[in-house]
Image 1 (cartoon, rainbow, N blue to C red):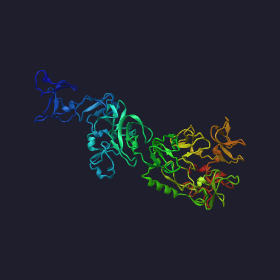
Image 2: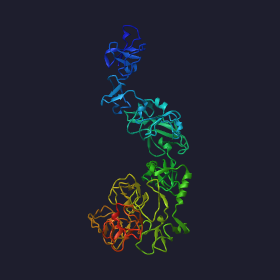
Image 3: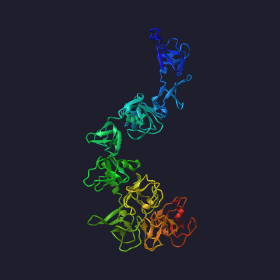
Image 4: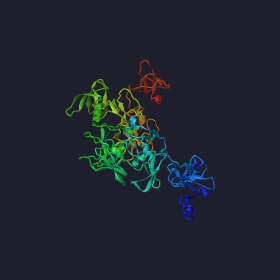
Length: 637
């Protein structure tokens, strides 16, 4: 826009100023500095409002512009209301008198009002509160811009809990800043209707942010000017000082790389991410029995290497991690692994709360010790599931086909037995607590010996730990929630995660992991053993006589050359004992049912009317003759 002083050559009267405006090229516009007593009964051709001085007017035509409208820029770059074509810019467009001046995008011709309110930087409506201190929940919060308490009038967003700002801060919020982490270009106040990544805190954010469109650099309003010091004695005993820097570093709290902004503790000589200054000191993780503590380094005279018990990659002992402080417990996990899913851990306030949790766990013991040996091992116990005392043994006196009454696996290793009746329990099964926390979510499970249900997580009737040894593989397996590939045991895709090896490409689903190592089946007089590979190209199951994939697990007898699918050998319920009770919905049968592997005679199934021989459910009531095949209740179990 070219501005001329008409009297620059002809006269020296500087009170008359003229401009040549691109929207009125016919004549120059003359500045009217003061309004006459009669007033100007005209409207501005820029904003449409009633004309008032100072303004520019044409003495030949009825064309007028407020001084502010006449001096508005012809082009605006990086406008916060139109980020789609920020590099091209918005151009001022001429239009008839209306309620406001309008800019249009050179590409999409989309129109934008040039009178931007500071409230427009946020995509959601803002709520105004004049006295925030009257609301208890706001007393503990600070302004996201100045980080001071919310003592004055504020605006906040219901959809974005982190966006709470003083009214005065919002009114004075700069539209452009120079920031020490991005010295090449200024950062422009912007907004987005979708989430963006803040380069400083490395979190997905929503709401207003400062950005450089040339470098694709974004920081949210809260991170633009954080407090220079950070203090949270529940996480660290000293003050952290904020350090602006453009360079990478390794965080001493979590062991991963950071950029741009860090916090340092001069007393401890540690440097951490800003987000890591608030790491919880103590947590109760669902996948471990004890509380675990955050440490910046692990001092040990024995261990030189430790693997994370979640991902099984190495934990750098000189970096931050969570570990168990119990004597003899070497449980260590990466910070980012253990804190990845908020549903798997809870915050613990202090060590006293840890002790209370442990006392509650000990109170849930299901055995009463009657006799112990010299080593302090319980040799005679009373178990809540059995009426007689149980005695410790390390082997069977004679070979019999018998399964443990707890887990329904074949008898092996050290176990307890009843001298008065045939009842057997693994030593580990006998020592299970009555109440135990699930390792896959934050809730407790109660041990039940009389009835059974499918697990809502794994759809199995038996339970396993999240880290386990498997006879069919040489390394430990750990549960990976994200694993979606095929199981090496059955070849079926693992949609709910799987037990994976951290050293090689091997994984098992819940069903294959819990297969018994041996099983009896009427097609062979010997025990069939679980076998993990077959060298034959063409293989068939000797029970169903269908094709068997030689790459997948199967049961075999090396003496008789028998082989069969696991499901053909084990049946539908391999871990259920006779007499186990299940409760069904009212619409299937009104009474509870009991499970039996065999039935006397040949009764008819109440569902399909075919004869029943094996694996049936029978009504618990003696006066009811309801009997049904297990396969006929697939939709009800």
